[in-house]
Every structure is written in structure tokens, then in C-alpha cells.
Amino acid sequence: MQRQNVKRSVRASINDGIAWAAMSGFADTYSVPLAMAFGASTMTVGLLRSVPSLVSSAFQMFVERLVSAVGSCKKAVMIAVGVQALSLYAAACAVFLPKGPALVFFICMIVLYTVAGNAASPPWSVLMGEYIPASKRGSFFGFRYQLVGISFFSAGFLASKILGLLDNRGLWGFFTVFAAAGVLRTISFFLITRMYEPRTRFHMPRGSRVNFLDGLDFRKGRVPALFFSVLLLLLSTYLAAPYFSVYALKELNCGYSQFMVLMSIGPLMTYLLMKRWGQAADSYGSVKILKAAFLLIPTVPFFWSLSRNFYYLAAVEMYSGVIWGAYLIGMNNFIYETIPAHSRAGYNAFFSFTNGIAQFGGAVLGGWLYGRLPALYGSSFVFLLLISAFLRALAAVPLFLMVREVRSVRAAGPVQLLLFMSGFNTPVSLGGSVPEKVI
Image (cartoon, rainbow, N blue to C red; front, side):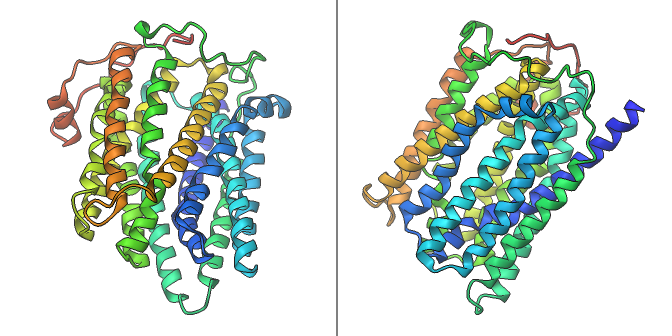
């Protein structure tokens, strides 16, 4: 019976991922264009991209309490997903308000949307950790992310067509896009009701708060060492990331179709190659995959600074998506490998908290710099890109000095990883047990 419950839950999680990605393709891709339609300035766009992360990061510290209060990871996920769906319906209705109040109300709804979405992630991750064996996590999540990527890109493309068709009808196109996103999240809610939660409660928080600095021993690859590196990486990334939309729409004068390609082709490549990165992480280790990502991520803003050609930038975004796929699967596997089940909700929440603080700090600083940096090749954004590239490179230093693998993995250098990702090498995972303690 339990085996059937797990199979049903895994199928539900895959379908939920497809619905969630379609929702994201509608809502996340076009939140900045709608804010700009309401008259948002560059700094306001920065606030739109940073304030939700800040509020969400603060709320993350209460996620473990929410799980304990309702007594179920599944119920906590359902509450969060339900709230997120309602926030999207409300955001769609912002188009009926005058532009000034509409912008404020829309930002508030995006804050609620982000808080609810991020609150669902830690308990959902805990449930998935109970379904998928350790030796199969990389491959499973990689496969799921492939489906997610196709769904995300398809939804973004459909949304661009809707906006194009209704372009002469005011903001009705945006209303349709965000209302559709709410419907898709409602579908997710009903799919999550089919997920199974083990009765053993082994995965539930055990009442003790996660002390992030306990046993801080960098030489043994403790979790905080990686988080410090991630904090610097995301801070430097979000100096520029919130303003790609402004740059594309205002300075490159992209139409909705070109905008959709630039904003979606990267995530599509990320998701399509996640399975391959997952297989590599299973065999060669999550830390090795993370090191490859941290080495290459700084090159993305540098390449963006070299040309304004749409096709060149689309190619750079494809390259960026491949690299960020390595980062995401590496982080995903690292947490499952190093954190015991009963602590994962807390550590996932703290990781989300770290992300939110970095995103807010980077976006606010980036917005301030955007209007003050001298123009380089005709745009101050290019100067901002180069600063971001330099700081991203610094983020790799603590990772390489402090973080080590926590399980036995196959030896591999850059050539072996490149051959594997190109399809010329297919290693067999070593598997192995993961020590049930915080490392």
C-alpha cells in the first residue's frame, strides 16, 4: 500500500511541477512588464523584484513553526499554495484600478505571491525527500525539471501571444495572463492533495530550532561554508538581474515575443539539462557540480556586456541556463546529502532566508547604481554587468577553499564533466549511504 501511495505522490508531484511552471511562465515573466505598464520607474522595478524577496525571507524563519503548528508538511504546502493562487487572482484585478493605486496593490499582491510560494518550498522538499531514494534524486529531479522547463517556456510563449493579440485593448491581456496563472496554481493545489505523507513523522521538525552556526568547521565542508558563498553569489547576481527586463524593454526596444525569448530561453535550457546535471551530481558529487557552476556563472554578465544583438544575447541566455542548471541541481543534492530529514524544513527555510536577503540587498544596490554609473558602450547597465561579473567571481573563493564532498564519488576533472554533459561518457553512480547528521 505504501509503495502505491509513493508512486501516486511522485506522479502528482510531476504534474504539479508542470502546472507550477506554467503558472510561473505567465506570472513571473510578465510581472515587470505589467508594473511598467502601470508606470513603474527603474527603482520601482528594483523594489518589485526585491521587496517580495525581503518579506519572504523574513517569513521563512516561521515556516518550520507553521509545519509544526498544522502537524503536517502536506497541509502546510496546501495552505501556502492556496494563498498563492488567491494572490494571482487579486493581482489580475489590479488592472481595473487607477494606475497609481494599481501599482501599489499589484506590488503587494506580488509580495504575497512570493511569500506563499517560498513558504511552500521547504515542506514540499521534505516530502520529496521521503519519496525518492538518495541514489536516484539527481536523475529524478533532473527529469522533473525537464518537464518543468518545457511547460515554463510554452506558457511564456503563449502569454506573449495573448499580450500581442490584446495589445490594443488596454490591460486586458495582462488580466488574462495573471488570471490564467491563478487557475494553474489552483490545479496545483488539487494535485498536491493526492500526495502521501508518511505516518512515521520521522521527517517532521523535532522542536529544536536550526542553529546555523553550530559546529562551524570549514575544513570539514560544513553547510554554512557553502551558504556564505551562495550569499555572495546571489548578492552580486541581483545587482543586475532585476534590471534585465528594463534593459530589454527600454534600451533594446524588444517586443513581447523577443522579450519572452530572452527571459525564458535560459530557464528552458536550465530545466532541459537538469536531468543530465542530476546524473552527473549522482556520480561525480554535488560539490564538483557546484564548483563548475561557480566558475562559469561570472562569465554570463561579461558576455551580456559585449553586444546588443538579439540573437547573440539569446545564445548567451542559453549558455546561462546550462550553467545555472548545474548550480540548482548541485544545491538541491547537497542539501539532501548533508541534512537529516527532520532538519530539512529548517535548513531549506534558512537557505530561502539567505536568498531573500541577498536578492533584496543586491537589487536595491543595483537600482541605486543603475542611475549613477557612467555609461559604457551607451548604457550604464553595461557597467553594472561588469561589476556583477567581478563580484560573482569572488563568490567562488570560499566554496573552493571550504566545501568538500560528504560521500564517496567518482573522480572527474573538467574534461570528464564536459564529455559527460556532451553525451560521450555515461558513468555509473556509486550510490552509498549518507550519514544522518548535520555536516
